[in-house]
Length: 604
Image (cartoon, rainbow, N blue to C red):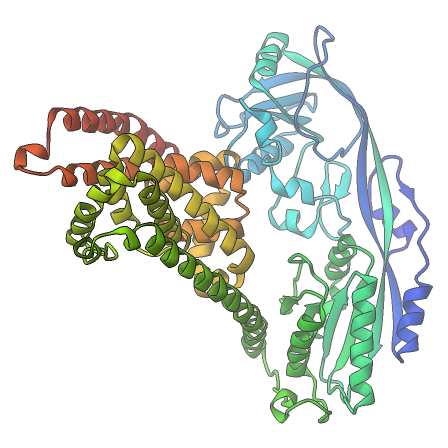
């Protein structure tokens, strides 16, 4: 535990203020009422605020900036400007601490961090990044910069301001006093001005956060299991359920700790205090609405679980790995078995088993939901197509109605439907759309044949935009189903593919729509997997949908055109007529101009 006086010695901050520590008596009394002993520790986090920040030209004109970096030190200085034409330009000589680097913003987070580190090492007062569209890129300068405000003893100071967090220290990130982002117009003004005046006042507030830890001793001193959370209701539920088991004969073989953190900031500070993890075998966050990944220098297995009656029962299975309990009413002998944890390797294996046991329940729930939705949708589509088309066909035409699994079957189906399309085009159009949406939503092979039918039945003018619309809408339906019911399934069965795609996309977050279009045109990853995984890669629907619509234009156009050609094919000369030749030349020229540029742009 650090006292306010000790914290003051750790920091070189201006106008620091220590607020009163709130009382933890209610939490302590709650633990005591269930027979737990408690210890309380106080940690401190730093909140940085700025006042009256201005960036002015030599003419005293104020210019706008687009990034609120942490306010590390107050400033009131006139600085000369040194312009880098490229982020890879070498720093030639050290500054006299009154110069600022002006550099282009990179698409790569690490490169921007490196530029700031070099500016710091060469004694520059700051870095001003510039880009054409700063509003969309303001959050992508250097991720670790925003994580560098917690108080971590043992790591280097940041230009006389708060110490770096463990995450930033591991990245060897050092940052100059001033960091901002401007647009191209302001860049031209800076070139003409040659100097800038920076003024701002920083207010750094030290905020105490309290951690109450409850202790329940086990039968012997073989280690400890940690449970942790930061919501009152979840803590009460856990204590009640554990107390109920105790009353029925449950005796922990290992000791249990329950850490109650006031906030997520407290979680980070508590984990960074090395003495807290030295005897912990495993840690379970029992009320994590979102994934919590605190610094974990001892490599203790961590597991995040949601708080509900159902998930708590799953957590008890996790505890059963480390706790021996006597048989109680309603539990089978298999639920009470004990597995010894003998090494770090076995620890990892046990945690993998834990994750699978929890995910199994989620997967079973999601599969039940998906099977139910699939049965309803396939029933609806079958009855709709039968009512709209099949029931209205002559017997010889009905015999040709088969699912188009090959080109020959698709041709037979097209010929059977073409006469029907002349007197009932509306009914056929609805049936075609329903079939397309069904196949695309459930990633069932066959949409290429539905595209061929679209071109054959409705022509290129109507068939192409319809198929493009169906393709986009069906992909969005699959996106929604995966977001609601597919998270555990995708992460269980495609972890490597998901991680690979995640790394590819993370490098292009600032131009995500364009990159998604690139992935559709150059399918390094199957389209069905992109549809399925996108909601789990933080790709919003507003960027997902345009990527499908634009990226699959070539595929839909060519397949619809092929269907139109096949429907009118009488001789070899029909394959390449004048109209088709012109259309293909236009597509080829557009591809020749656009596609190499896209490929070169995203070559990394």
